[in-house]
Structure formats: C-alpha cells, structure tokens
Image: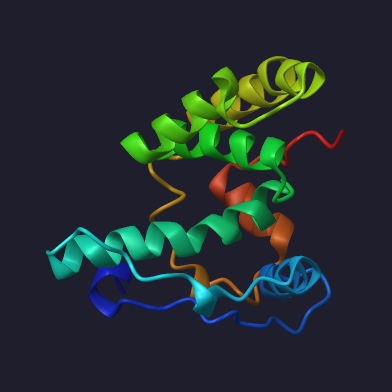
Length: 163
C-alpha cells in the first residue's frame, strides 16, 4: 500500500499501548496542545500530487519529533530541520536549518554552541545511517500500534541527546 496512492491525512491518531508510537504521538500532541487538523493548507503548488506531498511532509514533522525525542523549541526545531535536510534534501529544510543556525532564530550563544556541537553532528550521523528518504516513506498511520523503540530501530533513528 502506497502513501501517495491512498493520501492518508494525519488526524491525531491514538495508540492504546503505553509505549506505542501512537500513544507517544498522542501524548506529544496533548502536551504541546497541537492539533494536526489545524495546519493551514499548502499554497502556491497547483499540482494536486505535489501539493499532497508537501502536506504530508508538514504533517509528518510532528511524527519526527516523537521519533527523535526532540522538543518543539527553537533548538529542537533546528536540530530536526538538519535531520530533515539530511533525509530529504528539500530546499525548505536547507533554508530553515541554515538560516536558523546562522542567527535568524534568535538562539543564544550557548544554544548555538549546542546546535553545532551536539545536534548538528547527531543529525548528520543519524541522517547518514538511516535508509535513504525513510522519514518520508513510512506509512505512519499503520505504525500507531508499533512499539516506539521498535519503530525507531527499524528506521535507524537514534534518539536525540537530551540536554
């Protein structure tokens, strides 16, 4: 079954096991008061298939927070953008990762040091050891009941350092 064929839409699915990917995702959404159905629609892309791919990319971002253990803070977002760049090569990820790292994000000197010395090497290491483009090629809705650590291992994701 192909994600781009079925066009699943992330609706905040709930797993029922304490350590399932779905339960961790539900907890992430609740803790941060996020609702995946509140994202604004993709604009400026007229092709419906390409528009769906960009919608999917934006929706999967919160899944990646859960898989990596990165918080939705400026530092966590930048670390995740570096991993996204290693995996997808998307210009949006490159712009976000580079611009944020070079000062557009308002990071303190200490946070910038952590980004370069801890999270950048982590993103390069994890991004280079994962299967090519595996972040985008997972049918996450079919993994909601999967043990979170089993899914991480299968995808080659090392949890980000906790600081």
